[in-house]
Length: 141
Image (cartoon, rainbow, N blue to C red; front, side, top):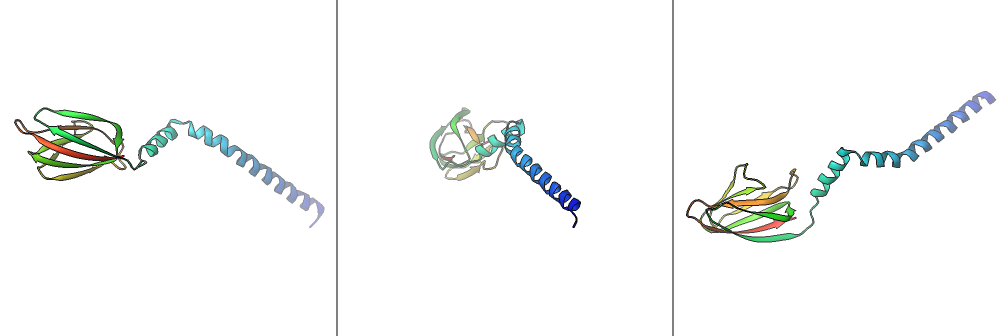
């Protein structure tokens, strides 16, 4: 190998090392810029919302024929609804626009929002006219 070829190879290696150092040095900058984008912020909020904290929240709902609701201070990932009766109850999760869950007396229903866009942040409930029910709810967040 002659001197000119060796110098050219050394220059190429030197330029490659400089380029690699610049790229590696720019990674934190790109990371900060990407983290500031709306997409990254939305993704971060979604993944944080899916973290299970290992906490339980128990409630007792006294359902009547009037539509009632509770808003949860900490949204739940899922819940167990246990209808102690004496009558059936309809339960809507988050809003009343969706189809209700019908929970018969002495029935337990599991409702999970793990992986859903929204956790359980509100529970709406109602019995048929003239009916009542006591529903125990154990939520997890």
